[in-house]
Each structure stands twice: as structure tokens, then as C-alpha cells.
Image 1 (cartoon, one colour):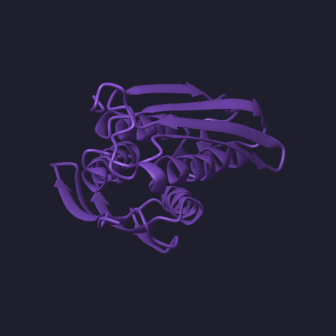
Image 2: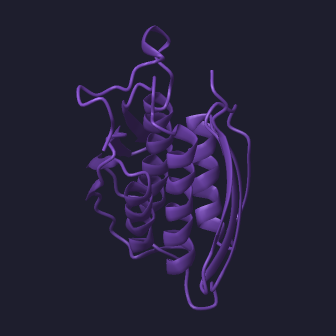
Length: 198
């Protein structure tokens, strides 16, 4: 199996990000974004996807968490893209229903080389702690654009905003964990009739 571990830096006037991702890890993580709720979501994502993730972000959190959340999503998407290379041998598709207490979320992904985000998520509050709920969509939009990938989130049930967003990140970890797995029977093939994923 090829080494699918990648390290990258992404620096702007708003955020400075250092990230190491191993797609074939065990779910270990060290995350410090300056936002407690985002840290929690990324830790859940890594653990449930079985990705090893080391990530630090120094951002303008004195403004709010928008730039940090969006830029971390972009950087994580870039890391996935680089680690996957031409995506030879991967399953490509993954989906997972994640129940989190009263919440039930479907996450489905296609590592298609094309960006689509369907965010069919309906939260009843605007914040979880000091985290703006609308930032979760910005995270996944940044991620989907940077891979690029098709990512669907569909909410079937849920009232508690924390539970709903937690189910999204856990479900995405599971779905992406499935999609990036190497298909041993077709490990030398690109999973597309076109011969490439764009």
C-alpha cells in the first residue's frame, strides 16, 4: 500500500495552519484550533474515520470563528487531495447513517473530483457555546471544494444542535473512511470509466 500520509502548511493573513494527516491511521489526534467546539468535532471526525490527524491553527478568533473554521476545512480537504493522489485503487464512494441520541444524519460522499455540497441540516439554535452553527456548513464547503468531492448531509431527525453537528462530523468520518479504503481486488485501477477522476 502506498504511503498516504501528508503534511502541509496553509498561511493567510487570517489563519496559519499546520496539518499532518494519515489516511491509514488508527484514529489518533492532536488538535488545537483555538475553538473548543471545532477541536471536539475534528477529534470525533479523526477517531471515527480512523485517520491520524495532527492540526494546529492560529487564527483571528478575536473576530469570530468563521475564518478559522473555513480555512481548517480547506486545509483538511487539500490534505485529503494530496494524500489520495490520482485516487487509484480507492473505493471512491462511502455513506453512513449516524444516530446520535435523538438526531439521525446521513453522510454520503463521492471522491469524484467535482465539488458539490448538499447541506440539508436544520438546527434550532444559532450557536453551540460560542461557536456559530452556520460555520459548520462553511467548513464542509471548504473541504468539498478543496478535495474536490461531492458531499451530502441529510438530517432525518434531531433537536439538539450539539447532537446534530456531532452526528455530521462522526458520520463524515465514517463515510470518508469507507471511500478512501483501498479495494484490494482493484488496487491498480482508477474507479471511473473515464480513466481519471475530474
